[in-house]
Length: 223
Image (spheres, rainbow, N blue to C red):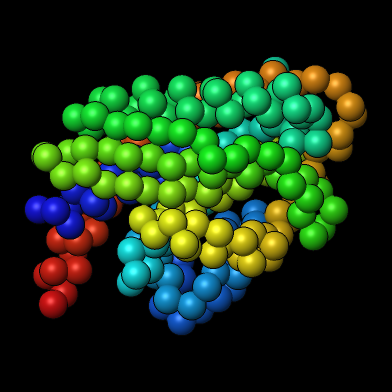
């Protein structure tokens, strides 16, 4: 039961935001690629979302949402310090609204939220969240590191989740390997609204929970 609770909570955190066990290179729908650390297995594929699980309990997920033909496309290069602060608040608010529906109590805070330069000379918004949740009397602590890119067609969100604070930055090398195949939105030095994160998280939550609940059951039947 405790294992199911942990998997359920991790699913909620990952979406709020096809690979073998020993493979490193992953191509996502010919839209992006990333070199994953050894030991990650794919646990689910849904529309515009991929998820992976490691034997040490760490999780990783990639989702993408329309960034073209929207009123205010996501472009990290256009965000100033004030915009990033507002973006952080919006991200926390959206996740708090979701967690409030699935947990008895929770506490969430952003340890950092900043624009970082990627090796391919583009920018990403990188946010580190610490989340404490209580379900069925059990307290769980998660560290989520979220990397977000703005492409011409899609906004890409890469989320790494762990319960070990010492490993919260262990996905940074994989972050450096991310390759978005489409062109990035060019920075034009103008302000941009930062609330585009809110619209799609809820749409993924139900599918994510169902998939992660079923995963341990499938593994148990294989045993």
